[in-house]
Image 1 (cartoon, rainbow, N blue to C red):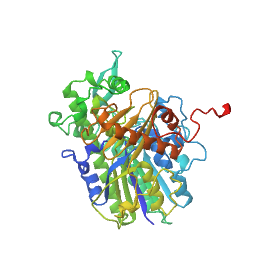
Image 2 (image 1 turned 45 degrees about the vertical axis):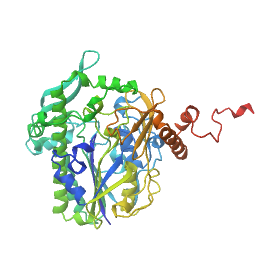
Image 3 (image 1 turned 30 degrees about the vertical axis):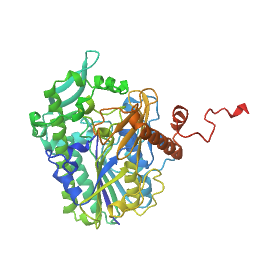
Image 4 (image 1 turned 90 degrees about the vertical axis):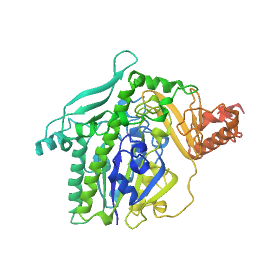
Length: 488
């Protein structure tokens, strides 16, 4: 039976990885994983926000279904834990005799921690590196390493004139003292324990890095790794927000993008790249330990992220109510012993497919991952029937803001009930700068995507479709759209 090593990053843009086309950032470990396994070029998160996306990975269910819709730090009234009785792959694996380990970011609820679902490992809460956590402080003492201290903070100016969010800072610690190194060390220690298990039980071991989520707090070796003068800004900094939902301009102001000069914006991209390189190096330590312990031939390795990061794209930072590929596309690398190496698969895949794949690797039914399909046939080189569109959703972060997206290989439709809907021709406009929602030349495309989005929402039971039924020409309704059957 195959063990599973699961590497997850947070807010990680595919644009930072060599295997996804970045010619500069040094990511030899993840590039090597892609070369020895399968790289999915069209992997998407079901929603670009941490807690709901992580809950979808845990459950195999889309956010509207599991109902954990927002991060608790900015909760807007949604529930803060998965409902009782909700299926999770962790509980299924534990019931089948697997050992479970999770080292790193949980962010999957408030009352229930990773331990609630059977994972061994320190309970690390919050959205960013908890550098005051007792286990991290104990690690520093164990290795006689200096404590956390930062300087050279980078932040813009908020619309109210106050300081903006912290974006980056210099960390006065060596790499060995970073939280990333600590997470890799604790992962290796747990892997050693699992490998020494007399019962030889199969294991699922996850490392969830908190980075490269901003703020980019890094030691000199990585903060200064890339020269900002040579770092390109994302092409979509040409964003004007003309014809776009006004909330996007508001979010740009919230992240104070226009209060930062170009040099600072380049410094932030350079720091983000350095953060990615640090994580790549720490992932390498974990994979080296796996090989040293003789586990490489018996362990599948998966790498992904919960969602992407803007880092200046569309004059934005972080993530938010804008369904651009910058934050909805994610890395997805899968290596399974005995399966082909060096594959590129262009099918649309999602985090819930990874849930189903975990169950499949464990020899368990995948049907409980209700919104996912196992990727193992694709990893094996087969060509099964597969989805040709990608559906995604958003429910809000600082405030409720419902959105639905349908993406094809060539176009993207975003429905924003309170504002302007969006339509992008991804062939002519890959950076999604021009909203073509009112362009007569794309009227047929708009009608087809709107009808298909409505159909998929109805099929999956997402009640967002009720809004679309009355607001769009979707071919007529076969049910009482006004909920007024009492009239007869």
